[in-house]
Image (cartoon, rainbow, N blue to C red):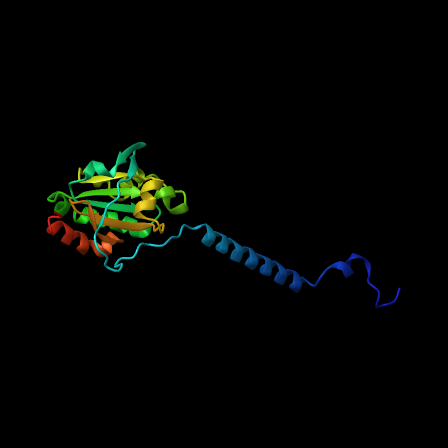
Length: 202
């Protein structure tokens, strides 16, 4: 055996500094993969436009929604001003919007506005808590307020009122059953709701 020939198993072992670098590199790769995986799994969606282009008033289509598993047709509320608000129970702007209603509850309670808060059809494509649990966590007082109805959007209602699958969108419908406003993020656009209330919505 010459001096240049490997001696036993020692020749098979990489230098220790390379081993440490390889381990650090492997941990870094795993961390990046974990972060990317979390980002991919985190719910995301598109909010409805706060100020869509003005359009002529259109009649609000009748469509059912679910309250504790029972179908309720929107026609039940025809003749009074309505707000239909579709949300996702993982949506941050939806939490802020519900808190805005608590802040303005006295104003709403003096009006004849009925606010129908509906969990998006399939909850915006992600699992999440029920609409009742969402309201109980964010604004429990509203669950006992007769001006509010909490339920779930059916596919038929979502097709009629939210065909672009926004995770936060609402329509204001007057007593003549005309959609007069479409917007989103009530915490930011509550002025529109306030003006709708002030108009008498007739």
